Amino acid sequence: MKYLFFDIDGTLVDEHKHLPDSTKRTLEKLKEKGHFIAIATSRPYVLTYLQAEALNIENYVCDGGDGLVIKNKIVELLPLNLEDCLAVAKECIAHQIPIATSIDTTNNRYSIDGRFIELNSSLKNAFDFITKADFDIFQAKAIHKMCLHLTMQEEFLIPSLKKVPHYRISPSCILVEAIDKYRGIEKMVALLNGKLQEIIVFGDGMNDLKMFEQAPYSVAMGNAVEPLKKIASYITADIHADGIEQACKHLGLI
Image (cartoon, rainbow, N blue to C red):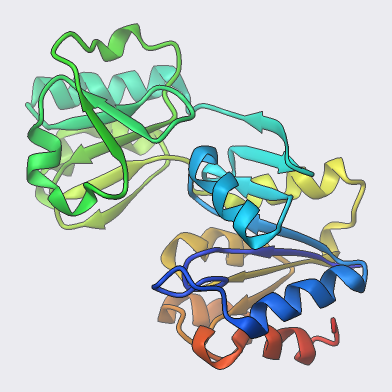
């Protein structure tokens, strides 16, 4: 029995959110063979469960490794370190760096004004931005994610950023959120009393790097970024060329 963890976008579904027929067929065959199938994504739970339902997958690591769902039941949804996040917020406010913050497990991002989304309009469809003039981040009981309008040249202004997990998605935007999906994968397999050496991960993007660096076996899609391909155990075909099916046949899983 293998424990298979799949990224979503660019791995299971294409840019049009379409699941290739070959991938759907392969997932069903894997289940029939008795393998454990799960999603591993950076998406928050609120955006993952609908996708998982559509894909007929009942197990997933979400929230970048901080969320675990087994057989459609939430095991845990952990927030970030509150003290460290508030330190980042304090420095951003002092330097008038626009921020938007998630204080729960929804897709909401709160801010006291609309500056962040005005400066990062490409993210309008990615998150639900809510402007509240009386929003006080220092009253938050939990912080799950933060969006910072911060250029590379301005990073030195926020030294506390080094204490929180984060990654840059554009020259002017940084996301503060859990980025170690493999930590969640290890937890899940341990809860299932499985063997870590039986884990196989599939991915295509930069946010899969830490997962690939730690997993005993990794499969990069043909459409994956080059840094991921360089460390992958195996490179399969493009998502549009039956990549998942090819990899699973190559590995003798189906």
